[in-house]
Length: 297
Image: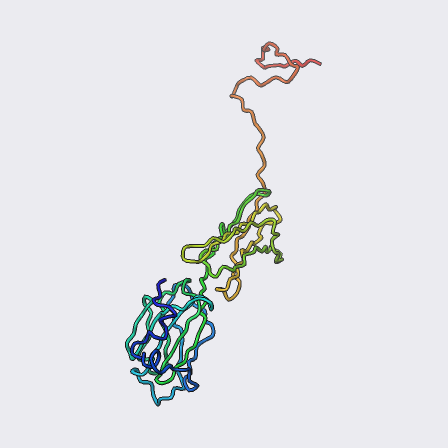
């Protein structure tokens, strides 16, 4: 993202305050002016974020917009260069990030918060609020961390198969951030016993990065149950920074007895001859019209 100018332009950026910042008099942080920010805050990806910055203990009886200058900067890490995000000087705003803004009516009350709509993972990092209330200046920093809560799909949710047959459960975890995530499987029998599924039955893939910086991962569980496993509940358990507690997604197992093979039955047409047993020879029809079979020893 293009944030505008860098560190070299920082202290000479404020045109209206150049006499203080870049001219004969260079302002030093004053003990009287206090800038208060949270040391760390967590924001949700793609939401509108308000980064607090409170001004207090200034030397003047009240804040006048004509004597206030606020500069907001961002950098991805402590060792990287700063990028300008937003300034307001004597009531004149300038945004260097699309949609960034401050509320002038709140600023004169000491609220120099910065609003960023639809924050992205690329904007995670350190935010600096630099404040001048003539003739004093000070600044504060806060670290903004991003999270994205994953969507989880377990398929199928009901597993029905015959005794001895095989089936695979698939647990797909999509669009999570940061990368660190825990996925494991548990089994609960009808008797109420909870067990962690052996790792040999599980295959978990390598997380795949999406274009927006989030990640996807899939874990699969192979099943080859017996009749005594009927009614077991298998859970895909997911732990992530975006969840307050681990989330479990359940599938119920239904095991049926294997179907028995049906023997071959040979049908004969009505009134037809029946097959002869081994070692037999046919004889002539008798007067009564019945057939006789003569067996040999």
